Length: 523
Image (cartoon, rainbow, N blue to C red; front, top):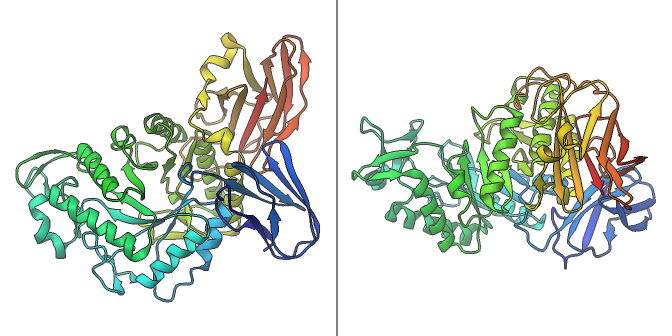
């Protein structure tokens, strides 16, 4: 396969920037774009890697003779979390594929799922062992994967359940058990039992296990997992435990024990995001389940998380189970709409990892091998995500749909010849959202025409064309407005759109809408 592949998922400002040209590519011109502005142009002789000039912090599109990729230059590596995963650590594992995945999709964090010996004894298995579900693990493979992820410009986060104890260790911890009404402990299936995550002796043990794992394996931090229950319970000693408060205590203690670690806590089904989002962790991570079944539910969850997280990146572990039951084409369309909903609201998705695998199950070992169509889709859309980062992710972006659009406001809107507009995700319509960024207005158009519902994890029909689109907006006295549009399935970057003067208003005929289009209006 011929492609452009950056040497790193993210570059620091003082690092050289290079693009691997994989496959046979003729000589041509390399162009580097920052949004709609061409910032560098250089000749490519047709062999070897492309060395780019130093670039200031920001996100860029790189193009060469029909090929494209994206690069990010960031002084703070924790400012974004584009999250991936690994879930196998056999002694003979080839680790090269994960480097390609990290670089191709610009993943800034990789979760090392179920690498440990036991949930309550992370390193107790020696150099090789079988994990709690009988998967083979070699610590040498874990170390190789950590080094590979780090050399690809990303961070390796070890999975650790914050309150789970297996049968072998249970006698030592059952005095901290969280109990059901009948007196038996809460559990996950029949092989993990739940303790109070804030119990002093457990927390001291847990933090010490994490510290030892960093020393032994080189992890950059940890993915701190829970199961979403119980929310309140009686401890074995009779104490009434508010588990949300215990999670807050636990995160604070882990941060104190590992001040430099990158920490991500799992708010299962949004519990308890409102509390944990404000703690000293590095992202707001949510695993959505019912009743968060629709595209609008995902968008609303991201909006709440962004507000609570006060600038932290927001990631949803929206597992696309649809790939297990539907065709690749139907499933890819579901994934595209899921990404459109998340990306347009400032969130990202934990989906891809390993070597061309994606998640369709909460037990990450049961992952799905991507078909070529899915691989190409994710590359296009993750490139688009990076290239348009400053239009999608900053905490300063302000939702203004309800105050700008519609007949009463009349400041800006879009009309389609053959489709209605909706302010929420509604089947059969175009979902329109407007965001303000200083002097710019950013319009998101998501095509739900042809759909009969808005479930995010269900087979999707091919979208139908909503017809010609006209953008109209109020002009400013003496100013010449400009409009650009971008589509992840099109050119992948902003391209100019002609603007027509209509007196008090200006208008622009937009390009055809496929799945998702981003329109930028500079007043």
